[in-house]
Length: 344
Image 1 (tube, rainbow, N blue to C red):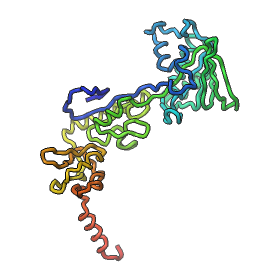
Image 2: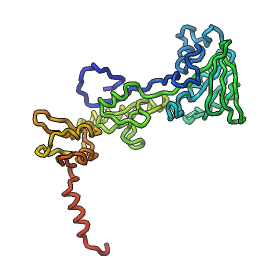
Image 3: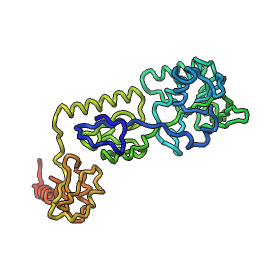
Image 4: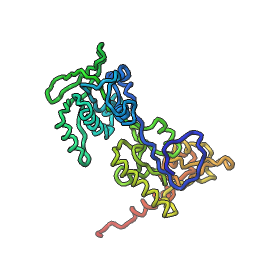
C-alpha cells in the first residue's frame, strides 16, 4: 500500500506493507512580514514563478509582471522561512538549485538584470556546482548576506534591501519582480498520519526513521516504511533513491512471507493487571490493547519493541520484559559475583 494522503472517512483495509509517501507542503511567506508577500502581485513564490514560466500558463510561458510587461530587474531571495529561528531552522535542501534555474530562465527569456540574495549557496550534488559557476558567467549579481527586506514603493516598484557580507555594507536595489524561495514543511495532517500508523516525529515535524544511517527508510513500526520528503527535505535525485530503497524493503518483506519479531517484548500477567490502563497511553508504539471483556491489558508482540516503558510504569507490577525479568537479572549478577577471581 502506497500512502499519499489519508481521509478520516477512509475505509479500513488489511495490508501487509505500508509505504508512507505523503511528501511536503510549501510554507506560507505571509508569516514573515519583512518580505511584504501579498502586498504586491509582483512578489511571488518560487512555486508561483514555476507556474508563470510554464508553457501552459496564462502567459504561454512568458515571464511578465502583473502589469503584463517584461521585467527589467528581478530579485530572487533565498532561505525565506528556512534556516530562520522565526520560521524553520532547517535547510529546505533544493531551494538554491531551483533559484539558480529560475535566474537562468529570467536571463534567457527577458534579458532582465537578476539579483540573487543568499546566505550560503548549497550546491553539493553532482554537477550542481558547475551550474552555479555557469550562472556567474550569465551576469547574475549574487549578494551574499543574512536577511533581506522587501518594500513596496508608491510607484509599485519593489525595493529589496539586504546585507552584502563580501563588501561589508548594506545593499539595496529597486526591481520589478521579487521571487521568494520559500521553505518546505511537513504536511498539515502529519500529526494525524503519525497517530494512525504509530510513527515517531523529529523536533521539526518530519517523520522519524528507525536509524538515520543504518535504517533510513524503516520506522519503529515493522512493515511501515518512509519514502521521500515525508522523512525530511530532499531534492529529486535523493527522493528517487530513497523511494527506491523503500520499495525494495517493502518487496523484500512481501517476498519473505513472514515477519521476524524480537523475542524481547513485554508481557502482561493478566492475574495481576488492575485495569488502570496506564500503559496504554504511555506505549510509544501503540502496542498495548485493552480487552474489555476480560478487563485486562494485552501486548501485541508484533508491534512491541521491548523498550520497557510499560514495565517501569505499571503500578501493579503486572508487566514484565520477557527474558529481562528481575529474577533473571539477579541471577546474572549472582553468577558474576560468584565467579572465581584469577588469571584467565
